[in-house]
Each structure stands twice: as C-alpha cells, then as structure tokens.
Image (cartoon, rainbow, N blue to C red; front, side, top):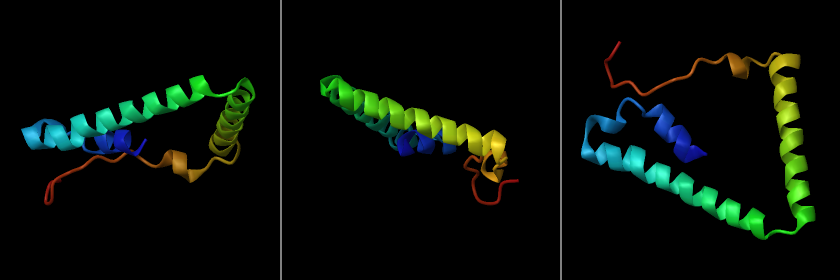
Length: 90
C-alpha cells in the first residue's frame, strides 16, 4: 500500500529521469505486485473458515470507513490530495 502511495505522491516526478523511473515507479510497482501475489497465495492456501474471517474483517472495516465518511463527516476525507512539488515552485 505504501508503495502505491509513493507512486501517487511522486507521479509528476517519475518520468523526469531513468533513476526516478526506477526508484519511484518500477520498484514500488513490483513491490506492490509481489506483496499482492504473496497475499493471493496465502488466501488461496488458507482454510475456508480463515477466508470467511478475513472477509468479515474487511467488511467491518469498509462499514466503519463509510460510517466515518458519511456518518461522522470526518475531516480526513476532506483533505485535498497532495503531490510532490520541487522547492520554490508555486
């Protein structure tokens, strides 16, 4: 998740050089893909009861997030997305 957040934050800087493309684009992408593969294999090899428990935890998390967004009107969801800007840029 952090790798994808890094890519989103530095999205304007990824293609400015080959080094940036590697460290801010390619490596985080493959890290996220590898982690997704590990999770997929773990879930596929788990018992059915464990998968239902995981689905229940995810469902409760989504319900609580929706409650925080629409019920409590949390300020977190009103924060504007940021992106990297070089020093001194307006």
